[in-house]
Length: 121
Image (tube, rainbow, N blue to C red):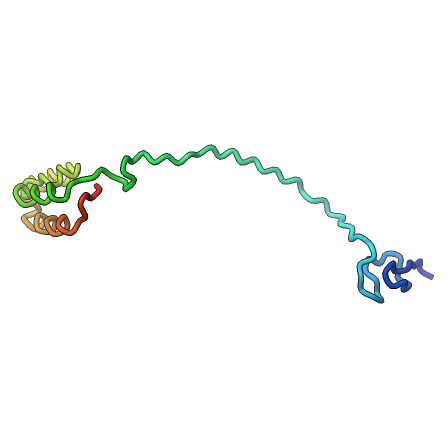
């Protein structure tokens, strides 16, 4: 004959190692967890600080649209508007090719015309 206990809720006879009463279904004893939980150590030493070094917050220096447009119209074949935007490589290319054979000047004129004032380069 197996050892038995009594349910503390309904008084029914239950096996000694039972955790839940077979009659009423309520929990009789605490559920024992034999597995040991790992000790988790969180060591967060993140010292990164995000510092925006841009003066205006838009990622570049502000340029006046009308100055760039005037430079493009009058000195576009020499790349003056590209030098104004601090794009020296493109400025030299415009000097050597005559404003990309005139096509680059026309495209730049249209793009500068539709930029907001001031725009950021």
